[in-house]
Image (spheres, one colour):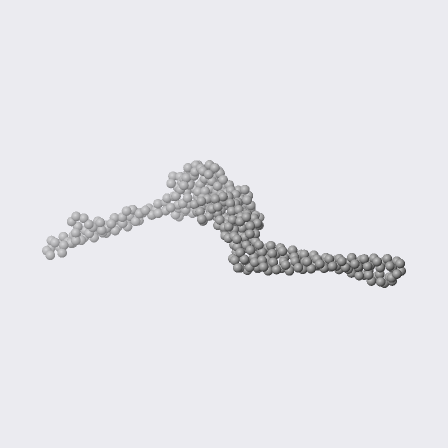
Length: 410
């Protein structure tokens, strides 16, 4: 390589290195001069309808549910109703094998007839004893018989009278046993006590049911599925907002896009404590004319405590916003607010400014403004957002390329 080519290559290499150094320095300065930009997410204060609500959950049940059982034990001989069967009052829905109870009826009938015969016999004996006693009484007056003989027959008459009383008692016992046997026989035929639909069946044909201290449940019948009710649990902190006659809306998982309506029919005073949490049961009446709702469904209930039309409202999240203090500055304590007052921030000239308002009803999303210096359409600050926007840096390699800037020749 000659001397001229050598110096040309060195010159090009020096130029490339100088460009790289300048580009790196410029990038560093650009990063140092990067600015932190603060922006705010806002929403305008607007007028509209608002409601104060309480949320809860509960279970849907028929208004009237009747459990059908039997006070006698035995083997299920037949079933005349199943799940979802429509039944009428007095309709036979099951039969327990009556053979044993029929035999008991016949046995108690025999005891009853025997007791009746014993009573009749005792009455005849009493009539005879009283007749003999009367005859001997007349003979005693005439002196034909001794007084002791009269006493003997008088005692016999009194004994016969007592025997009649005992026979009457035995007859009453036999009749009671006979009636009980007939009643138990009637109990082997299970009938529906109401018009309705069977929602539960707990027995099968051939199964033995045992009635001991309580009657076993064989069927559960809902009297009317077009009228349902929800048993909702409400926390003690919210129960004062729920009143009888108030409106409620709810949804179920089976129809997530459908909102059903109901009315509070009862707020029960009995409290339930679970893990130190006190709740109360609220009953909501529901119209189920379309039969979409089924017993046992879980309902997500919203109680409407109060509502306003055309109210000035703001997002509830605005009540929680507080601007960050500037770097190196101490946050100044805010002035004390009166009851019902809240402090929010409105965006003016790119900066949040505090505004004191008086709030009314509200829910998790919106809150009513009933007083204060807040204008409709004002930009309510919800969140502060910051981010670093650095100046565009130059790619060092792009500065090293260009016409006539190739690798040094070999």
